[in-house]
Each structure stands twice: as C-alpha cells, then as structure tokens.
Length: 528
Image (cartoon, rainbow, N blue to C red; front, side, top):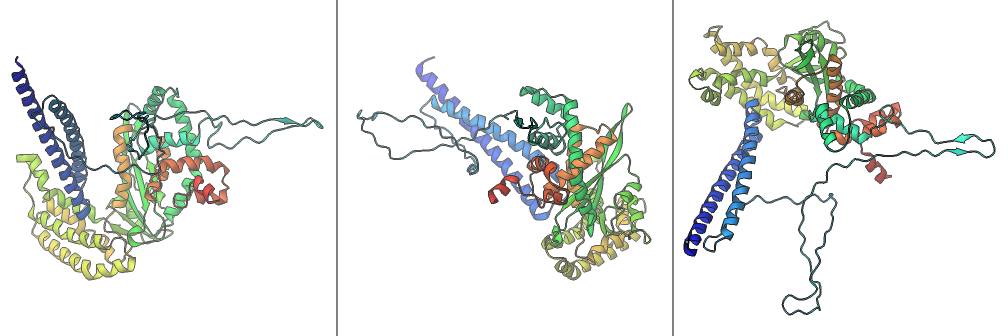
C-alpha cells in the first residue's frame, strides 16, 4: 500500500471513529436528559407508583452503559485522529465535575521542576507559581490489631499487685472493635450483604473470619443494643399518630420456606411541623394474624394510618383498653386500585391481551390527584394551617368525589373491576375522609411503605430468614438503622460510636445515644 493510500485509510478510520464518538455522546446526552426529565416529573407530581421507581432504575442503568460507551468511543476517536493530520479530534462535552470535598486529606506529590531553562540553558530559575491537578484516590480498607496494655505493679511494702481495670467492650471478650462490629451490622441489615459474602470479602483481604464467628458477634451486638431499642419502642408507642404496614418475609422451615411478616410502625410528625423526632419500630411474626398488630400496639391509643387490612379492626373497637385507635385510611392504596385500571403504559406493554382503559378509573385518578396536589402544597405546615386549607379546598373535592362515585357505582355490575375499586373506598369512606377533620393526619401511608422498602430490596440478597429468632433480631436492627436514617444520621457511624460508648454510659443517660440526641464523641472532645 502506497503512503498516500495509507493516509487515506487512516483519515477514513479517524473520521469513522469521530462519527461514532459523536453518536455515542449524543445517545448518552439523550439518556441523561430523559433521566433528568423523569426525576423532575417525580419531584413535581410526586411518586405515583412502584413502576416509576423501576423506570428510574432502568434509566440509570442505561445511562451508565451509554456513558461508558461514549468514553470508549471518545478515546478511540482521539487515538485515530492522532495518526492523521487531516481529521480533527472529536472533543466530547462532559458534565462539569464537582470539586472534591474539603474535609478529605490532601497528599502533595511534587514533580521535580526543571534545573535549567529549556530555551537558553540558563540555571537562574525563579518560581512564579504552580499548577495543581487533583486526583481522587481510594485506599483499600486497612486492618489493624489494637493492643490494650494494662501494666501490673507490685507494692514493695505489702507485695500487693495493682493493675488498672480492664476496659469495657460492647461484646463479651471484646475481640472485635466497635467500627468492625458496626460494619458487620450495617452491611448485613443496612446494605443486605449476608454474612457468608462478608466472610468471603474479608478472606480476600487476608482476614479469616468464619460465618459462625460473625454471627456470634451479631447476636452479641443485638443484646448490647437492646436497651437503646427499648427506648425507641417507648418513643414510638407514645405517639399521637402512627403509620403502619407489613410486608412478607420468607423464613426457613423444614425443607421449604414459610411466609412470615415484617411489620413497621413509623412515628413521623414532620408533615405537620410536629416537634418530636421521627422513629421507626419494626416487628416480626410468623404469620399475618390480626393478633400481632393488637399485641404490637397494646399500649398505643391514637391515630393509625394504614391500609384496610382486617387485622387492624380490633384496634378500632370502642371498648378497647387503653382506648380505641382512630382509623385513618391511605388514599394511595385507594388510588392504586383505579390507577391499575387506567395505566395506559401498562396496557401498551401487554399489547393485545391488555383490557381496555377504564374511563371511570381514569376520571377517579384525576379527581384523587387533585387532592394530592393540595397536600403537596401544605406539607410541612402546622396542623392548624393544614386543617384550614383542607376545609376550604379539599372538603368540596372529597364531597364531589363521593357523590360522583356513588352515582357511577349504582350503574355498574358488582363484578366489574372498577366497581370493586369504588367499593373499596365507599365502604370505608369515613376512614378515608378523616383527614378533613384533623391536620395531623396525612393523606397517605407512604411513610411506612418507605420504611419497608429496604426489606423488599433486601429479600433478593438474603432470600430468607434462618429462623424466627433471626427475624426478631433483624427487626431490632432494622428499628435502629431505620430510626437513624429518619433522623438524617449515618447509621454505620452512629452504631460504631454507640457500641464504643454504650458499656460506659449509665442507664439514666442512655437516651443521649438516641439518634436524635446523638453527638459524635469527637465533637464532644472538640467542644470540651
């Protein structure tokens, strides 16, 4: 091949690589803008369904792949352009990177400067400045063994031996430090990484810890943290209003898995500017019997925001002690039944097998969405302000919705799907309309559903609970971690500090370690 022909081939290859890089960059930009639009829609209109969450996850994954493709094609185009002078290299527009956090330590690596001028060879050089390029680096986890030395002294007069007392440890024998314990707990219950996977990762790092050894520490930590858990339980059950919900949890049985339940009760007064801190209480049970919520809430007397599960009915009985629980039903559950019949996108996915979109269901969704729009505008306002707005704006919409629903229901067969959705609300209308009489009540039960989302995601990783005791222990840890998250506290850092201090903390001051009062020990040292 002649030199001219070779140059032509190189130019064509460079032009092709540049074109491919432009296409990849455009696809990545389209994916990024699509993801941004969906996130803005969710922020503007609120979370509508679990389908929206799955859509965002798919868009995130697609954007990751397309961005990686664009990076590869960008480099290929740059290399191809370097081999020819006829094609200009393609420069992809990349999103601006945020500066690295100031709290990160900086390590200066100074490149030796020139000793002589590259132009004239003179050695009379004077520094006029410097250019600094920052590169973010990750250091693999470092393991260390802390040796606590207690020196012994003998008295020359009485020959008695004196020695300082052994330090307190969060777990018996104290072979694992608080940071390691917090890592094991948070990985297992916060990140849903089973102990056998943790064991394998530690082994790759040169630390041989058996699964039984890790499990032993998990049990010991659950016992050590139980007093703190009991304080959270008391705080949750003292609330005026709770969100309640449950989700299935597979539990190992003889040769199979049974379906147990994880229950959650969330105290969150932030929607109406309540002064009390939020907290989440998790419980475990082998089945979904109505006896369990009765037992869980035996000391509670207030408002319960939940779905229409029949197991809650005994809580609403007038003669209940210490008092009847007030029922406040979730509009998101009622809306969801209509939305499933009016989901145009789902109908397109199912193709010819999809049932026709119900006009009545679509109309019901639009009317309910108008109530959600009002609620978003008053979220975080005082209970009095919320109640005033609801009486002025929401009450007329609710009355019209009820009249419209009862009128349309009269002309429908009891077997019609939209009739069943209407009956779900109409038969329990007092529970749905109760938010019009109390500004503390929320329109939905989403606080409890958000708290259970971690368990729903974790089921794919840990598959099942090993036993009922394991489920109860998991409920304790989910309570601690979930409460920390609700109070915007890093659960792992909090657990590490609590495990380091709880043995030395008097019972009367144990509440200082609760997430909403917690101050890291290093901050206390600086303040002193």
